[in-house]
Structures are given as C-alpha cells and as structure tokens.
Amino acid sequence: MALKARALYNFQSENKEEISIQENEELVLFSESSVDGWLQGSNSRGETGLFPASYVEVLHPRSATMLTNHSTSPSGSPANGSSYVSSSSANVSHQGSFEDEDDDDWDDWDDGSTVVEEPHSGTSTNGHPSPNLQYPRTYPHPNNAGYRPKPSLERQDSLGTAKRGSVVGRNLNRFSSFVRSGVEAFILGDVPMMAKISEAYYIDMGGKGPQWRPNPLPLTCSVEDPTKQTKFKGIKSYISYRLTPSNSTSPVYRRYKHFDWLYNRLLHKFTVISVPHLPEKQATGRFEEDFIEKRKRRLILWMDHMTSHPTLSQYEGFQHFLGCRDDKQWKLGKRRAEKDEMVGGSFLLTLQIPTEHQDLQDVEDRVDTFKAFSKKMDDSVMQLTNVASELARKHVGGFRKEFQKLGNAFQAISQSFQMDPPYSLDALNGAISHTGKTYETVGEMFAEQPKNDLFLMLDTLSLYQGLLSNFPDIIHLQKGAFAKVKESQRMSDEGKMDQEEADGIRKRCRVVGFALQAEMNHFHERRVSDFKKMMQSYLKEQIVFYQRVSQQLEKTLQMYDNL
Image 1 (cartoon, one colour):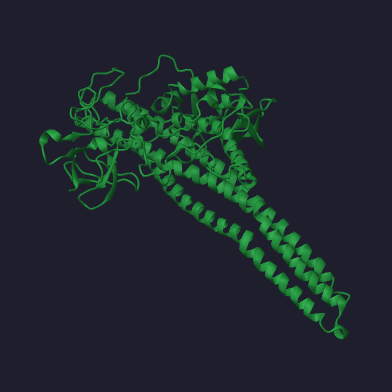
Image 2: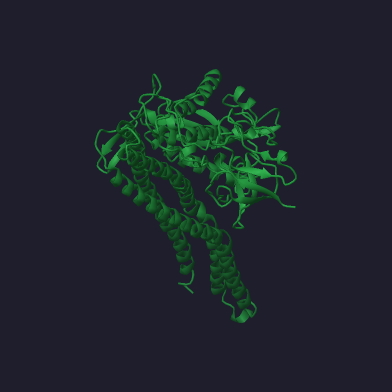
C-alpha cells in the first residue's frame, strides 16, 4: 500500500527536480526516509519529484499514534514520535564546499605540500549540486535539519529600534534565495548592526548609473607553470600553479583545492555579486596535458575577472590567497576568513551608497531590462558555444579526414600515371603527388587550429555562461526587496505599520538596488572588453591560419608552372 502524507504548508518548486505542493494536499511518498531534509513522491496532480520533509506529515493508517512528523517541536527539539533523523550533511552551506575532504591538507599546508583533490560525492564543479544527484539541495536551516517555519507571519526585530504596531510577513518558502541569502532579513531590519564594521565597499554614481568604486590599489596576477607534484612518497599527486601578483615580486603556489576554498568563501560573502565560476573538476584524466592546459587557460580568465572587479579584488580573503607564503599565517588567515561575520545579509551593511535619489520604479524597470538582456545573452552564448564546439570537433575529426582522403586520391592519380612509362611525365606525376601531400598537411593544420582560436573562444564563453547563470538569483533578491517595499507601504497606508518602519525598509531596499545596478554596470563594462578581445583574437588567428594554408597551396601551384 502506498505511503500517504499531508502537506502542512505551501511549497513552490524552484527547479525541475522539485514539485510544488499546497497546504492540506494529499501526497504519495516513494519512501519515508528523507535525504538532507527532502522527501520524494508525487502530488495530487500526478507530478513526481522532491519537496521538503518539514513541510509534510506522514500518515500511517493503522494508528494515530504512529503518525510520523518530520518537523520539529516549537522548542527546537525533534517532535515526539518523530522518526526523522537529522543528517550531519544538512548543515552544509548551500554553496557547498570541498574543504572537508583531507582537512589535514590545510593544517599541513605549505607552498609545496598539498593533497590531491578527490571528487566529492554528490557535488559538482564549484560546490554546486551535481546534475545527476537525486537530491539537489542541502536542507538550508543553519542549526537544525528538521526545522520548519512557524505558521505565524510575525517577526521580531533584533535591532529593537522602534515600536511596531504590525510587521511585514516573512516568505514561508525557506528555500528561496531571497531567504537563504539573508537579504530578506536585511530588508526587514533583522540583521543586527555591528558595533564596529572594519570593512567598507563604496558605490558611486557614474555616467550610466551606480558603479563600484575602483580599487585604490589595482592589481593583476599571472597564473603559470602548472606542475605535477607528489606527497606521501608518491601516493598522492596534484598540480600546482605559480601565481605572481603584480604587487609582489615573489610568487605563491596554489592548487585547485585552494581556488575552490576561496570560491566558496566568495559565494558565502558577496550575496549581490556575480562571482565567476571556476573551471570544472574532473575525476579522471586530471594529469593529461590537454586538460591541464585547458584548466590553466580558464584559471587565467578567472583570475583576470577577480582582479578586475573593484570589490572582489579588495576582499581580505582574496588578498590573503594571493600574498601569503607563511604556513602559520596562512592557517590564521584561513580561519579568519571562515569566521567572517560580514557575509550574506550582513555584507550589505558594509556598502556605502550615493545620496542621489532613485525612483524605485525606475530601478525596477532597469532591472527588468537587464533581466531580459541577460536571458537573451545566455541563450546566444549557449548557441555560439554549441556551434563552436561542433566546429572544433569537425576540425579535429571530419575536416582532417576529408583532406586526407583528398590527398590520398591525388596520390593515387599520380601512381596511376606511372603505370605506362613511355607516356609518363615525371614532373607532372611529382607535382600531383606533392599536391596530395600538401592536402594531407592542410588536414593536420585544420586539426591543430582549434588550439589557436576556437578553444580560446570557448574559454570566454564558458566564463560568461557561469556569470550569466548567477544573475537570476541576484535579480530575485532585488525583486524580493521590491515586494517588501510595496507591502510595507500598503500596510503603512492602511495604518498597520509606522511610516518610520516603512521608510527603513525602503532605505535598505535602496542598498540592494544600488548594489545590483553597480554589478550590472560592471558586467557590461567587462562584457564589452572581453568580447572585443575574443573576436579580435579569433579573427586574427583565422587570418593567420588561412594565410598559412594559402602559402602551402601557392608553393604547390608553382610546381606546375614549368611543366
């Protein structure tokens, strides 16, 4: 008999692995066991997928006492009779991390001794869920995997700065990026103001709107010399990269796991910034020459975007990553970065925005325009990626084979002409044979050419696929903030909220709006520069390539002139 459950709350799905459920809806469970706070089953509409375990109660027909409640009691301890067992993995940050594997790597860290990265079960590149992982997201509550939101919409303001007659409701979908990121808490005034904030990031008003203030100490950083190294007497191997910042004459040596640690720190801290994705992990073939070269190229692009970002480049954790060469200081800096309190919603407290007034409706219109643009660009980048990938495949395979066939056919003609010696013309036979060899050479040139142009194009397109994929969540933060402003103003107009509180929500929404616009402007600035460079490089390499092909053919043609 199928296991039944009843939905306690509404849940709106956010990806294809999940299904939406409605309060009091009867559900069918495939298993009573949850994984990371998620159950799998079907709803009353026949849709199959995942939904939060804490949003449902399992119904056992035999006895009411056998009811299994996957939620927790109000006190925060597991509810009586609950068969739900909290998974330790449920407390992992939603960005994911690989730092739990071989943790002694960090305690023993030095420039030449690190442990090889192993594929982390259920996690793909950059700590995001793997596409073939059955349960796509870790249960997000930071302290209790069985947490469920209280039905009441009432909240308490930790600042306690004003007496409120009413409050703006919280979003019950605890899996929304607006909630997970801490931006909702910031907008509602629930992020405590620190007594002293040691860091500040500035947004200025430029000719095209808000923009990040440039880094007063701009820098670049080279990524060079990928070298295979070993430890534990050769048991473990890894690739190290030599990084040389422009503000230092001494290089540091980092492996991919160090990059991955930094990336997760960036995701955790910079809520409203599109952090560039790292190159993909690979479980096998990590030490093949082509893979190492590809990763190096993409790490160079990643580093270029990091150092060029006015805010990310100033982050203390990034500076520590680039400059620290001492073992003890490295560990201290790493722990300090991991204990950073100015992350998520608290990061927004570090932003200093212009005093210029911006109409929120104008901002919303501007965001909607960028949303449509980014969607269209994402589609076109994917289209170009597919076309360029197919073309590269043809260069390496199909084109080379066709030119080889043509060359062999020409040489077969030459050989046939030699079959009747009295009428054989050695000069003509030699020219035709050489023509065949020329086309074989041209085929090899086609096979090698993607390394000079198409691969570089695909590297840039891959970087922008990652950057563009970040924006839906970032835009969702702004949309959520707009909604809270509208709700608070309505409640103020109805006399259900002090105008002072509504003004506070509007003020904090301005911070999110300025930050998003600054990030949009930075994206456009980099887009123009990167795509100009990409297209120029591609066309120049194409010209050089076809000139080389032309030279081969011209030399061959000259062999026929004196026949």
